[in-house]
Image 1 (tube, rainbow over the protein chains, first blue to last red):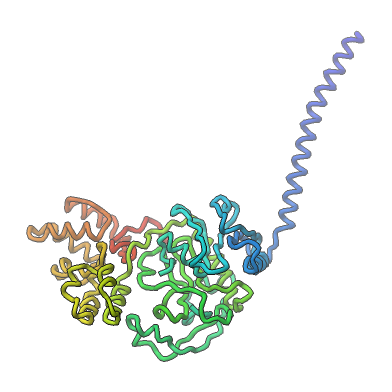
Image 2: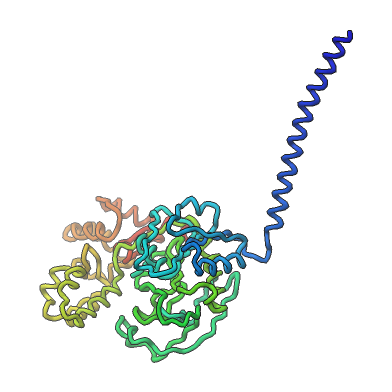
Length: 142
Length: 283
């Protein structure tokens, strides 16, 4: 009898532990989701334009700092990337991509985008115009 | 290009939202270079401009020729840039598909208040064209630019190489000793210019009494001539020359035109061809 009671109690304990574990897991998940939502809400600034901008230029340059400061002031999110190492997948988490260069654009090694590239893009100055020319776009240098 | 956009901004959302662009206008002397281009002699002595940036440098920014820029519905001029190298109206800021070219070189700290708003609006505007592929690529130069190149030949010391690379050999033989006559000939035949590795007026088309190679009615005329025993060979040749299609029977051509007439456009820059705008493209 004593043995049966013990087995029953052990079974009850395991059953509860399984459910307790599941409940705890769901609770943690809910808390994490809540935290993420709160953080996102805190980061969202209604005074800024709801676009995520990637500035691709010369890293560490004064020009990059100038653009980034301006873009961060006006847009929900702005980040930068190196034009010498740019790959298309870097654009995935952004809404608009800016391509820019500091220095003599005619002498610079140029980023060649594939013709299939069609993300919303702003090309800037002579370098941008040469990039467009490589893609045979009307915005290209003529 | 210098620091300024030329002329009053056009009525376009890129000057309205999310920020109102309020240019401060000033008058500047018309650059001498403008006079060298078609209709340059008709420009006033001063032109209205507004500063987009204040770099203090008269160079460093860039404009693109305006000729043929808007001959396909996927491209638009947003503002001409005031410049001293190309024509009046050369493009300072323009869009082709999902690319917006901002020709001004200055960073934001050098932009004027109007320039900053224009730049921010440009970023917002181009976002609407995310994933928009171009309808045409630049395969040839627009006819107005060809007229300009012909007009430059009389000014060159050794025009031979220039001539050969751009214009048909037959034309060189005829006009070698008469460059001014050549410029006049090209200008007079503006509506017939086409591209086939080199540029030349299409005298075969002109011989049919058709006024231009770039009107939709031209296609209708070609197709009606397919029924004419004497002209059907030439009509078929011209249909192949000016479209990207390869139909062989009048019924096929008629069917194609009937289905696509309202969406046909002609692009010099896209290879001097009629092309069909994809359904719903302009919505």
